[in-house]
Image (cartoon, rainbow, N blue to C red; front, top):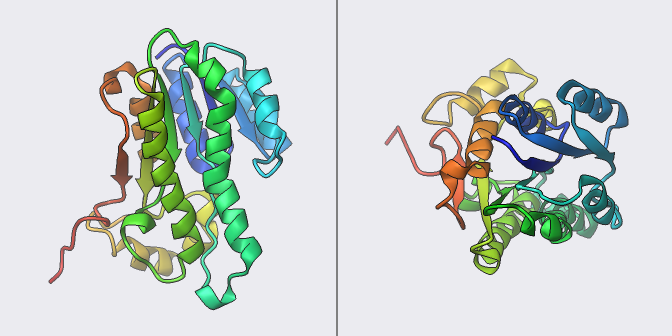
Length: 242
């Protein structure tokens, strides 16, 4: 798959897996991440350009838009948080950080990249990340569910506004084995009990999300926009026990 794709969260589990898959298909990449050493190493491995920065920095998006250049065929915003606390322990700054990182950051990333995406020879593609927790209610997910629910709403609004020139879709994972979730799944007994909640009896892998992201970015998905697609082992829709 030719073209150039901009990936926010390039050194995260899902972002890095997506980058490697796309590079293997001949896609040029511009990666964005917070860790300078990891980002530089991955960029060198993949022959990618990169920008170091945190999505909480207001000026980051303009810097990335300038550095990544025009002619973008896709954008992946694979940045997220996993703050699980009961409502009474959440502070205003917790809600604001989750919202800013997940939803506002996604909106600003797309906004800044619009000139580059509009130069794509065909319809460009944007892939955002929601969560199974938007469709299913889970305890201790008030802040995360609110922020990811905003991403789902943003996906639909942008898909309507930017059609037909830019397609916008979101992936809604269940719990996935990434560095972000390492605190939850470091204990194998706990990981096994969490996996058992899914009809397919395992946790997600970054490659599961990367495979769908790469498809949504490709011409083969050219008639898909405005969709929130669950990659969740069946957890959002299936119950295998009465």
